[in-house]
Length: 385
Image: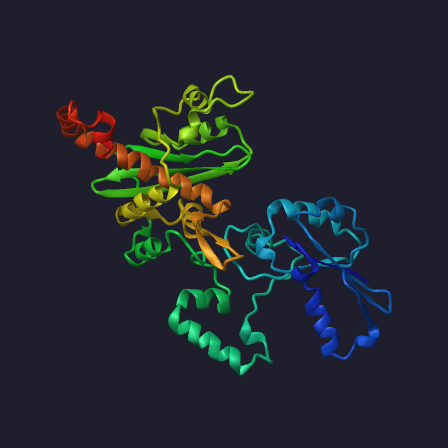
C-alpha cells in the first residue's frame, strides 16, 4: 500500500508524523518489517509511507499516483483551496482519506466539509480521552487541573469543543465580559434607526463589513459579511439587498488610493454603485492606539450571535503575533484570516465614535483654538497639545 501522510504546512520531516510512526514501529517490535529512512518508511511487503505538506507542494501532490490511504493530521488547519487540490488526487479504486483533527472554529473548511456537511460515504466519529483504554493517570490529573483553572480551555483541549479565544486574543477579555453580561444574543433591528457600516478592504485578501446601529449609548452590531476575490460591485449588491435604512459607510484610509489599472479609486467605484455617503477614516500613527480605542468601546457593544457569528469568531481569534526566537508575543497583531473582521470593527471606534465626539465638541474646540492662535506656540502645536 502507498500511504500519503500530510498536513497543511510541513516545513521539514520533523513536523510530520514520521517520528510518531517510527516510534510505534519500534514499540511494537516491528523493526524487521520496516526500513525507516530519513524521508520515508518502507515495508518489506512493498508498502510505503510518504510525507508531504499541502500548501507548498501543490504540484507535487497533484502528480502523486496510486495512493491507497491519505492521512491528514491536524486537519483543522487545512484550507478549502488545499482540499480542492487534494481530494481529486486520491482517486485509486478503493482508496480512502483519513482526517484527524481537534476542532478550532465551526467555520473552518475541514469541519464544514466533513462534519457539518459530511459526504454520504463518510464515517464521522467524535472521540475523546474517554475512548482511550490506555489513558494514563498522569493525564487525568492534568485535565482535572485545567478544568479547575480554565474551563473554556479544558472544553477545547480535552472535550473537543470549539476554541473560544485565541491564545493571545487581543479582545479576549472584552468578549468574555460581553458573553457573561449577555451582550452576545439575539439583537433586534430597529427599523427607524440608521444602519451604518464599517469596512476593511481587501484585494486578494478578504473584505469584511460590519453593520451596526447606534441606539442610545449602545452600539448594536446586527450583521456581518465577508468575501474575497470578488469585485466591489458584489459588495454593493449585498449592501442594497439587505434593505436597511443606511446612514454612513466608514471605510479605511486606503479607499482613496489611486491603484494602477483602475480608472477610479475604490471610493468612487463604491459611490457610483450606490454605496454612499462614505466617510474615510483617517489613518492613525500606531495600530495600538486604535486597539485601545476599540477596547474602550466594547462595554457598549451588543452582537447578534447568529448574523454576526463569523465576525465574532474574527474578534475572538484576533491575536498578537508570536516571536518564536524570544518565546514571547510581539505588540503587533498577527495578520491572518481573523484580522480582516477585526480591522473592520476597529473602524467603528476610529471612525464613527470619533466623528460623533467631534460633532459634539468641535464648537468648543474651535473657540479654544482661536484663542490660542497668536501665542508663542504655533496653531498646529497648540492644537495637538
